[in-house]
Image 1 (cartoon, rainbow, N blue to C red):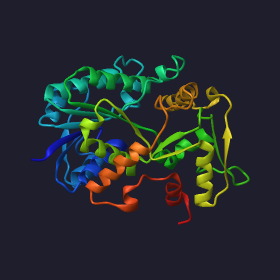
Image 2: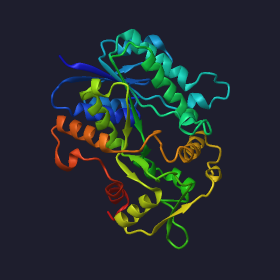
Image 3: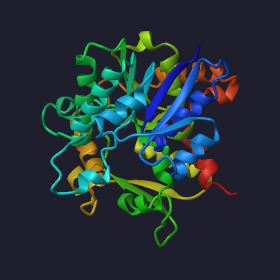
Length: 333
C-alpha cells in the first residue's frame, strides 16, 4: 500500500518541486496530495494534471488542515514569510502562529513524519546581534514540531540562495543591475555586501534539486530525524558566481562590494529587508548561513538517491551548477 505524502505550500516553488520529484518515483511507494487555498488556480491545476490529488485547506484554519492531513504518513510544509497577510500593519498573528497551527493539525491527524522548510536561528548564529524574523520564526516552528514528541521523525530541509532569483528582472536593480541591466560600457555589475567567513554562499536550484533533496530524505526519514539538511546545489563566493556567469555567457561582468551591509538599498520592501538582514547575520556568523560549515555532500547523496528511485542516472543524478544554469538561461540562444 502506498504511503500518502501531503504537501502544504504545494503551489509554491518549493512545494511544487517536491511534488514533481516524488511523482517521478518509479516504485509507486508514495501517493501524493497537494494542499491549496484555491484548487482551481493555475499552479494547482498543473499539479492535478499530472495526477496529484489537490485538496482545499487554509493553514489558519486548523480543522481544514486536519481534514487535509487525514491518512497522511508524511508531510512537507513550507510557510511563506512573505505572505501578503503579514503586510497588514494591523495583523497581530505571526508566522510562528501559523506554523504551530499546522504542526498541531498534523499531530491531531496522526502524521508520522514532519519535514519542514526551516532555518537556523539568525539571532543565535550571530551571537544575538542580528535577529532575522523570517529565520528565527522558521527555527521556532521547527523546534516546536520536535518538542511535540509525537512525530517519528522531524527533519528540517533548509534552502540556500535560489538560482531562480537571477531570473527575476525586478531583483536586478537591488544588486547593481546584474544580470539584466548593463552599465553604459556594457558591464553587468553585481553589487552587494560580502558574505563573510570563507565567502561560501550556498546556492540552490529549487526547481531541479530541492525537490530531489526532500525526496531523498523521505526515502530514509529515520536516518535524518532531528537533523537540519542543507539545501545546497553549488557553493561559490559572490565574486566567483559572477565569474562563472562571465565564463558561461561570454558577457562582461564584475562583482562590486558594498562595504557596509546596512547600505544595501532595498527601498523599504519587506521581503528585501530580510535579504539585507541576512547579509548582516551571516557576516556576524562568520559566513555560516547554517550556523555550521556549509557543505553539499549531503545534498549530493540525497539527490542521487532520489534520482535513482526515479530511474535517473549519470548527469541527471548530479546537483546543478551555476555555470550550467547561467549558460542555459543567459547564454547565446
